[in-house]
Image (tube, rainbow over all chains, first blue to last red; front, side, top):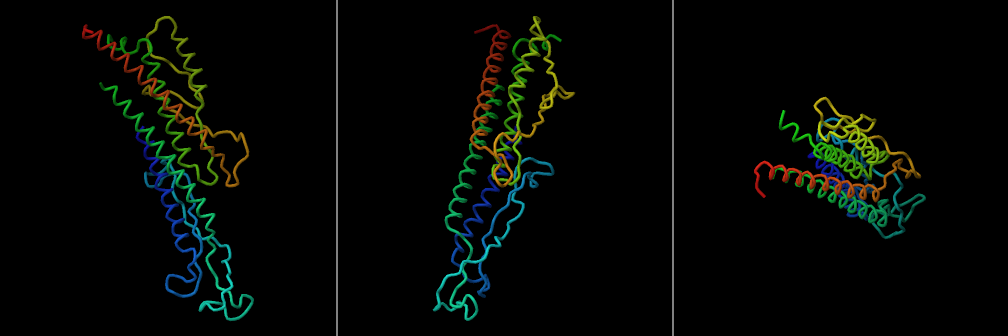
Length: 139
Length: 144
């Protein structure tokens, strides 16, 4: 019975990590430079879930974040010739590369992660009510 | 043993099986809900109708005596281990509708509904168990 709590906890952790990557994507939605300040556009991060809960032991049921992938989609090019990072020559002359973060997609994912988190909290409440009902048998 | 005939009498063994089954099923449902966003995860299931049918059969087989342990017929989804505890092994849920394009057949609504139903079934069984124990306690103490 207590194992069910572990399963739901692993899902809460996974959904929170997913929410963190979404927050990172939205925060960097208009970052045209890499962490060292060099031009190099931010790529959208995606958390990929996999069944199983290695934190609780081998073969433990649950879910975990297997990896955080970078979205290889091309950056969004915006025409802004006065920008210091604008391309000087070539096909994209006068364009600045912005991250491939789509605000609508991120918002929908954030909502889904929030709802999934809530669903797992509901499961935990059900688990708790079952445990306390069983404990009441003691008198 | 005298106490054994008290404990294994009437509805007590039945309710014990129902509680154990509900706890096993709760675990399966919690796992399905935890994996609602996992790519290529196939939901697992336990069929309560199968369990109830086998339970009814076991009660019938126990017959008129109304006492003695229940022997549940083992199936693919549950069996009784040598210690007499009920163990469940979920099977994969059949693909009743189109898969999502990440390869899952997740259905959060159905899982939550099953969870609510299962919690209530557990509550009923525990409540009835509590009443049975209360009756026993009254009979033992000889006072109301």
